[in-house]
Amino acid sequence: MFSFLWWTAFTVVGIWAQKMLPGVDFLAPGLLLCIQMERKTLLIWLIIFWSLIQEGIGGLPFGYSLLWYSSIFALYRCGAMFFDVQSLMFALLCGAGLGLLHPFLIGVMTMLADMNWAPDRYLYEGILQFVIFPLEWLFIKYIYPERLKHELSV
Image (cartoon, rainbow, N blue to C red; front, top):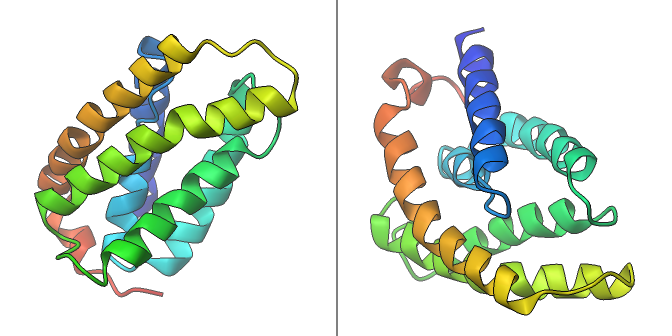
């Protein structure tokens, strides 16, 4: 129950932060933390729930958040072969990868939807994602309750 409350509060704060700074995904570092803790059931539920939220509040066609969250999982799997996935350097590399991927995914989705593409804006959002991602990951790793770290993984 405590885990449910913690992740619900994290989701609410993440959505609020995304409202304050549009174009930056504040939920993504939580997903990386969940992957690192190897909480598979929780990971699946968070991806479903957050994808529905992102698709519902976003202005892009359906599929962006699925590509976005699956790219986080792919970055983790590829990076785990070469780096210590619990380190800040790994979070920096994930942030850099997501920062580069953001303008590309937005460009593809806007092209598919025949929408206007503002490259300067999306490059700026990618830079912000790169800067914010590792800082937020470090913060939530620090404040994540100790008793939740030792729950059994299902």
